[in-house]
Amino acid sequence: MTALPQEPAYERSLCDRVAGALGSAIVREEVAAGEWFATEGTLGERFGVSRSVVREALKVLEGKGLVEARPKRGIKVLSREHWHLLDPEVSAWRYGGDPDPKLLLELVGFREVIEPALAAAAALQASPADVKELREIAATMRDAGTNPSALIPADAALHRAVALVAGNSLMYSAFAALEPGMGELRRIAAESKLRGPGHTEDHQLLVDAIAAGQPEDAKETMTRIVQASRLEVMEFFDRNHGSWLRSGARDRKA
Image 1 (cartoon, one colour):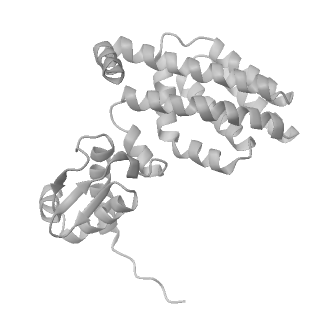
Image 2: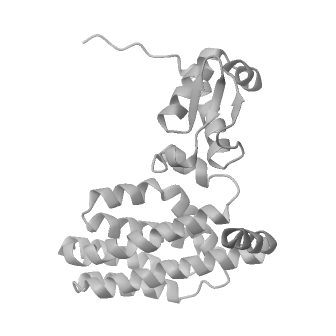
């Protein structure tokens, strides 16, 4: 079989750097949608790369629904409804950098819909081997106590395991694609003054409900866990960036 030609590694690296910088700026709305904001030439000068590298980076962004590039007009940012929000790179760009309360609370809203349904499905689908794994992860959470470096990965592992046990590949794929934001939620929640032992206890109750094959109890417990996450995130931002959060809430009501 004839080997396919490969672009040099340094060009791939430059392409990734340009695509990452532009993609992050776009999804964090540092460039307005509908704006023809640059040309291949100006971007090449800005990043110190060739037009071919810029062109490849723009192909990446076009494939993710972020931009439209025309040779004589330049590059235009597309509106959010075109963005592939479940693309892993787009997700990483959206939730990277400084935490954005609007994005994180939007993600909590997604979790409030999807995770209780996953928990209920897991209660109907879980095998003895699944239950054993869930109990082991819950025990790791319990042993972690309030140590964030141990608690956060155990928490993430339990939610991923529940999503996988639920057996719905579409919902699991959506859940997994948003993991960068989930990680940011957990990091912030771990610093919230509202976080207490009830967090770990609720996860143990969730596993108990799944083990007992009780979908309604599993759904109710997961709902409580995610709603607690919303309160923890709001408390964190209100304590650290109070004026921003309150003004943002007023803007949403306007």
